[in-house]
Length: 411
Image (tube, rainbow, N blue to C red; front, side, top):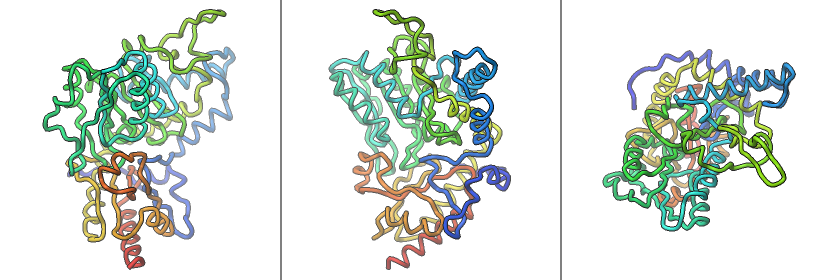
């Protein structure tokens, strides 16, 4: 945990999020489910509304004024994304509807084209289903083998003998950057370096890290990276896939139809250039424009400031939660983000979520789309809290008070 103090203007920040003012019953909303989806500032809501009310048109094909305005706004977001993750070229940025679609795109368009029987796909035991199931299906379709890097009791990857997971048959390593269950931040540089030794490609699931950590795809030297807009102040239905251009060029389109073609005859099709080769059909225009506004807001606050503040919140929450003997926290990684999974003795997490809702607290309960990890933890489900930079220590105090109230009620 970092000890540096952040300097965020929380009063100003919280005033930018209309939903944080609403009441749950008679209680002010305490929103602690940010790993699932983040709330949206007024600037994002206004950007979407402005598109629909002032220049609603399809893109890349309208020659009238506000049609061109829509195209410009859409493509401007592509440039913003490239800058946000320090991609060398905006043409390596593909818009999808989320991280799940981005992973499926690569599993289909690269995996099913280039993998063959005996090849190996390497993932980890902490993956979200979105970075597990597509590779299972890809392995079944191609005859490739799916292998896993196991977890330690601390909730970190077992990397003592990292090289043993890699061999000439390893063709792609797809790994979550930050666990959506344990908060563990994985050492990507170390894993990517090992993958390079055997010429394996690397895919980074940054859905949980992009909203909180500054990313540099060139420094990481990853081949693919994906994240979702709705976890970083943007609307639902928009995500990003970054890929190295030389790899994207040799992949086939994932979705066919309009926009992704240059020319079509009765017998033949010529595909469009990057990135439009992978953006078939009418694009999610409003969502992409909303994502652009979200990136503007994040850049104004600063990712470094966000990370430092969330580290403060997480350290404070862990300290207070550890004072409750009936509470079990899952995972104790040395480097973690603002995600804490836990259970209370004798209380099902679903019941816990419903009870604290009466106190205005929104938290997550379930298997968090990570059933193999739940099995590793020997639980069916957990409760989970996850922070963003608009949360406060006061909200954590109220959570702790609610948890103690639950324990008293159950006993």
